[in-house]
Image (cartoon, rainbow, N blue to C red; front, side):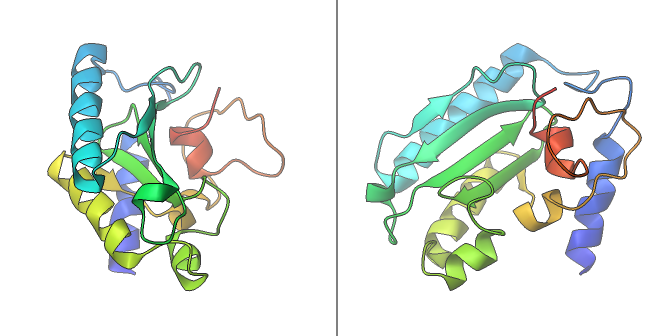
Length: 164
C-alpha cells in the first residue's frame, strides 16, 4: 500500500502539463543509450535476442522490449515498456492489457515469478522503476490536458505510455 502511494506520488511529480510527450530535460541521445544498455541486459539475462522497438511515434513511450516466450519459464512472452519520463517502465505478460497485471498473469500460470523478478532487477539495475500495470490503469487525475484516443476515461498508462 505504501509502495503504491510512493509510486503514485512519483507519477504526479513527473506529470508536467507543459511537457506532455517528454520531460523538459529529455535527452534523446541519453535515452537511446540507456535503452540500448537495458535491452542488452535483458538479452543477456534471458539468453536470447529480444525484439525491440524504439520508433514509438507521438507517444510518451520511448521503447518496447519483447522477451520471446521460448525464453520464459511459462512460454508466454514478456513485454517491457520504457517511458520517455525516466525512470518509468512497466512489465506485462504477453502484451499490456492481456491480463489485469502481473499478479493475474502469475495466478493464471502465464508468468513465472522468477522471470518477473529477473526483469524487475534488470530494470532497477539500469535505473528504471517498474510501475505495476494495475496502478497505471487507474484513472488519470493529473494536471496535463490529454488528447485521449481511447474509450472511457484516460489512465496513467495513457499519460506515460499511450499515444497523443
